[in-house]
Length: 443
Image 1: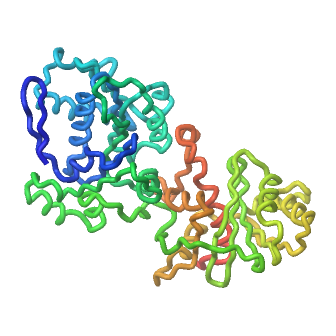
Image 2: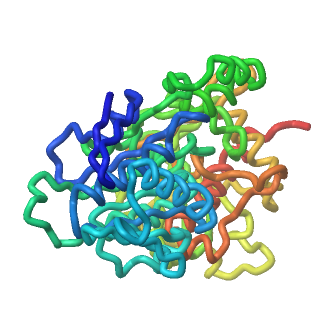
Image 3: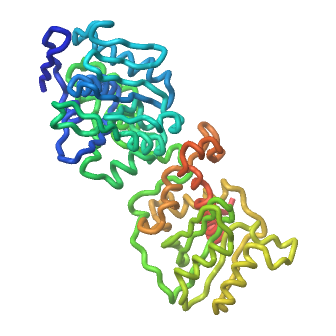
């Protein structure tokens, strides 16, 4: 596609790749367009994003846009450089057609438009802005809360007299994510008409020398090539706690009141996470979860009874051994509270299947992964995606610290900046307690 632009007193022609054209043009009628340009090395991601930002600033005089990344240094060294190179190529004259203020980190155009440059690590810092559009550099590095905060900033009501086809736009560019994070969640699992994911392989760039791609084919392993050259989603289990989980492990499951019901518990207070399952000799079926913030054991067992008031078969309690607190015979231990509540409701057939102490987390992880997919490619663990949101969130996102076998538990600061991260670890603890109890791996 040829893009002809009149700017800075001259006509400039740009030749866009097919994927770049797809990224810039809006194919739907929604008033909000959200687009991610996901590409491999040399696919023109930053080049295309900064060009779109300038096109919007030029087309809509008086508009305001924001360009950000997780850290400002990435913006300064990458995205801002690309903006200034485009302005130079288009013939815009500094101090005449635009002014770049290094202190305020803003480009102001002679037509009244302005582009702000900022870090996105702390969403609170830009919550008061009113924007017409926003761009994210290396979008996979920011949190979902920053993404949502940016969406909420697209509310500037100013319109020029010639803004007849104006749409709010949020666009970003990135390498493929290292896990199934917010981009996968929003653009693949729960995609909408106005949420567009453009996959741009390096091979799409016809202007690269042929040896560039050939050399990468020779240098990269198959998986690395798939992600960083073809721009595709790869096998994200490499750094994740759960390995081998796929669509085959997701099933629409039916609760059966005539089968034993397993209730497996983690007693963290905020959030408290329980999972419900049926099982047989080989398979476990997680069909529901109870995940409540800032709660108590009593409130959680009340929620269980609200959902399952007429269970016919036995109820088997699994979970965190420390919840038993056997050193005291108090009626206020977590499992005593559960037992009393079930008994008062009329459930008599209640069994407790608990370890004397919690096994090491790596033992639980190994046992869990063996159920997910064993060396014979057999799967014996299944999750209902309709009712087990936080279980799946853990399966797709709980990871090890880089280069270690230590589970990467989110810090208070990370939780503050991304509320969803508080739900990491505890749902996995609940389900892995059950799995390890029945299918402990023998050393």
